[in-house]
Amino acid sequence: MGIAGIRIISKYPLFGSGPDTVRLIYRDFKVKEAVRDNPHLHNNIIQIFAERGIFALISWLWFIFISVKKNWEVFKFSKEDFFKFSSLGAIGAISGFLISGLFEYNFGDSEVKTLLLYIITYPLVSLKNQKES
Image 1 (cartoon, rainbow, N blue to C red):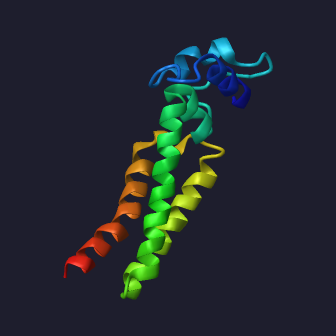
Image 2: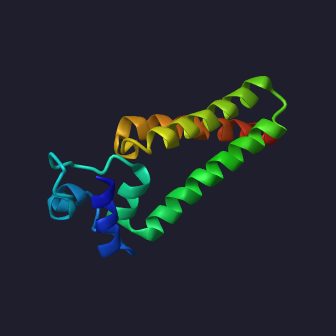
């Protein structure tokens, strides 16, 4: 699947093959030894790059970087322990998401994505509320 993804990326590097098209074109790019066709490439980075291109991948990586950076700021500057530890939980959730995303396209699951986005943003909203009060 990784080799097929690299082949797709080399053919469509800038804008990718298009949203949700990997399942349609995978058969043309897979290696002969591949047992079956796959609807996705089982890797967040390769999948996003293959489907959406380099600009989308850079944007996604920037989003992850900023999320970790802002949650670290909450940890450093928050006065309440609850928000400190919720920000550490958010960083842990991002780490777990990235590690599992090396072996499965979990960014394509709406349940996983929704929960991750909630966990990431909760400490950030709480910090904003602390600054205002």
